[in-house]
Image 1 (tube, one colour):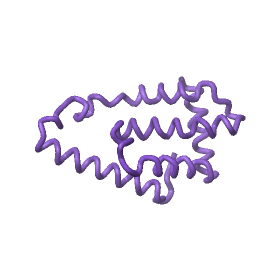
Image 2: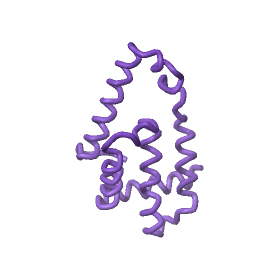
Image 3: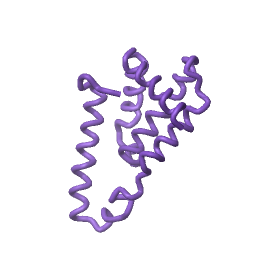
Image 4: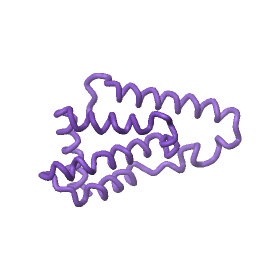
Length: 127
């Protein structure tokens, strides 16, 4: 999915990514805990594992069923965000508003919705 302009959701994700990178760099130099395998990125599932998880989520979703697509959308967004930023993202005070904002953007923006359906189609046909 391409982002043509920096929306408030994209700005929030960019800020979270920047904050996480800055915190990881700071904690890596000062904390022995920061050197655990999970902190070094070894605990993060591979892209192939993420793709398999997403494919499993959409396996039974009919591309003609708008309600099924509506129901799976937050599940896919959640899986992608947690893969990208880690499970601790759920503890961030903006977790729920960010999730709601991303899901709503994907629903109301016709271009984003088309791209989302294309993602589901791709996941269903290539797994």
